[in-house]
Amino acid sequence: MTRIYELGVLPVTTLFLRALACLERPLFAMAHDTDEIAARRKRRTERTEDDVLWCWKQRGFW
Image 1: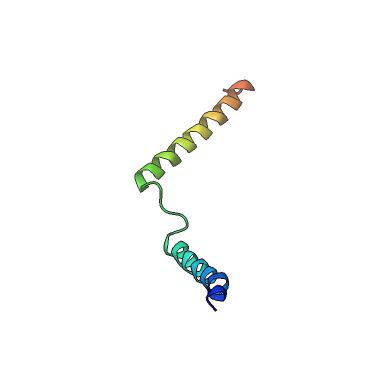
Image 2: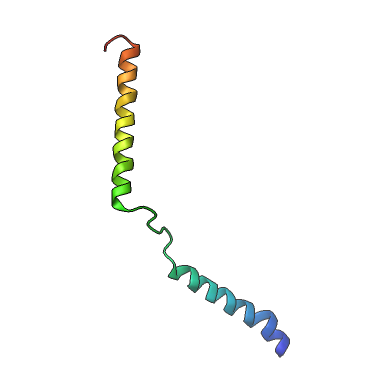
């Protein structure tokens, strides 16, 4: 009976407890604050504008 408990019941309970521990943690924790997100978004838009201007300059429109 002890062998059945060690091989059957104990692994299932540990798996269940590990699954509960994983569910308690947020899957995607917020890594950045809102100021950093806004700064990244601003840099991304500026970089896109520079790419567009470069394209126009290469074609002789600017």
